[in-house]
Image (cartoon, rainbow, N blue to C red; front, side, top):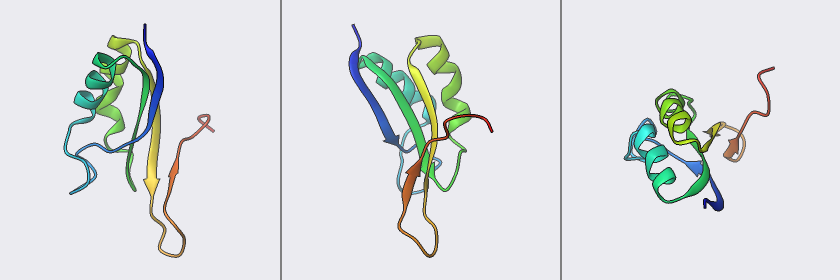
Length: 85
């Protein structure tokens, strides 16, 4: 039975000097740990999202798309879109 936990702030190796693992490895590890889902939220980028999509579908865990945004004139924030619009 999956843990009722979703990691909402996880960086892949596309976040230079901040994330170490490939997005697919992060998704596979989350599935092995029994997480209900995972969000890949790279710094100012959606680059890692594509590589995690297939393993998420294969393992059946919820996969969330997001990004950690660092504006010049405001505090940083993590954003997750709610639809494709």
